[in-house]
Length: 78
Image (cartoon, rainbow, N blue to C red):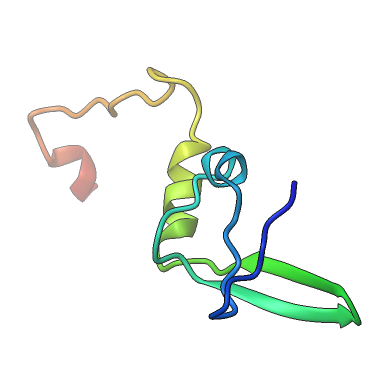
């Protein structure tokens, strides 16, 4: 894919890449110069991204079962 640097130095990520990787306006990226003409663009992690990824990795629906509780706390106190 190709893109063009604007007169302001901005580079537009092509729409297919943004859609595939769920890139939204306002997300931050770091740019690293590897050598002349080669650069690396890395999306920075937003606060809470780890939690979202963890929740999405949970097993299928119905995997977790509610614990069985009795009406009495006698067992807890023993």
